[in-house]
Image (cartoon, rainbow, N blue to C red; front, side):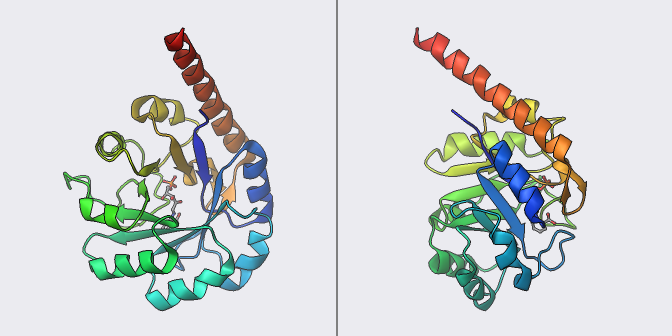
Length: 227
Ligand SMILES: O=C(O)c1ccccc1NCC(=O)[C@H](O)[C@H](O)COP(=O)(O)O
């Protein structure tokens, strides 16, 4: 089974095309204005021309209902929303109502000290992104590792959801991350960049090569188990 890969923080068509040619399943476009990878709303339609339908993920931080509603006509397939846990549940319910639970990808900012994953979120979204924690940033932190155990626990506890492992994944740690978590889907951003918003072709290629090698090893192990 092929590990699904989302490449996030894409700001230019060439990077989207390279990621897609390597096998990216999803491309993330960040519209959060404070992100160094933010794409202005007026420039989104042109960028989306380089990303096929079915693979377009909008990334934002706790948008108002009006803002999210105004994004619905842009042509995204999924909406990855980062937020703090003290946000009113009504906001999450509103996002879910606007885009639907199948298209809502929730990315709660969870301090490492928070022992349990907030079960209440399950009601609103089918896809959940477990990211690294940083008190000064919502995503694209480049921090790796601390959340792997949480991710593994969540996937075992809530097997009916789609879980995405994120946070500082790169060619340097993706093999270990996949081995530890058995993630079926990963999200990469700063670990394959030259600078914020500009991807590094060599690191992207290396990342995909390692992921596909992991996939082949998994398939071989399964086949041996069947025989
Ligand atoms: O990248 C940003 O600047 C960003 C800002 C605000 C919300 C989300 C953001 N990025 C989301 C992602 O790139 C990924 O989903 C995830 O955070 C992993 O990023 P990284 O640790 O850089 O691999």
